[in-house]
Amino acid sequence: MERFGWVNHPEPLRKAWDNLVRPEDVVIVAGDISWATRPSEVLEDLEWLDRRPGRKVLLRGNHDYWWGDSAAKLRKLFEPYRSFAGFLHNSAVAVGRWVVAGSRLWTTPEAPLLPGGELGDEQANLQYVQRERARLQRSLEDATAKERTAPGLTRVVAVHFPPLYANQVDTAFTPLIEAFAPAVCVYGHLHGPGISAGFVGDRNGVQYVLASCDAAGFAPVLLLDSPA
Image (cartoon, rainbow, N blue to C red):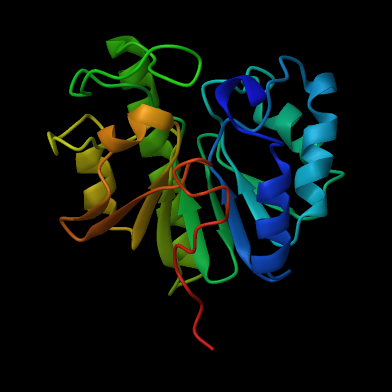
């Protein structure tokens, strides 16, 4: 990551994570986990995550080519890592007092002009957007089903691409998210000069949070606090 100006990455993140996160905390890893292209190449990065404190919920980013399309294969890949609470793949994860739902998403036509390059934009593609909307819908439905067996869970949505941009124009994803009414929706993807393109703040009762590494100062972002 040095070629993007991320000096000595991920050491600053490791230090902040190990200092701030408790073993019982839930940590969302919102995509772009590894540059690996095959499952056999991602093991070192998964081991790095597993060594960090907290119970992790993982989801796919646009650079996670190793992720694949089989939930069964992902479950087998993640099985050795005891701190992984689950992953979002047309599904939701109930962990502690939270239920986390979401999907990767994609750049929508409503997005402003974004910087190009590997840490910049992915062109809007309506086929991808509709596919991701369907995946998000399935994940939200799974979260609702999990709530029926564990009432009182706090809803969280985690996605990789911004579901809403600074212009606050509705996208294909915002009606689904806001109808689900989570306490918070966290996303990543935007870096450097693209950070300002994402919407951050409260909209229609949902708190939107951008937590990509450089936007967050290479430290975990506290989304919600458990009651004492």
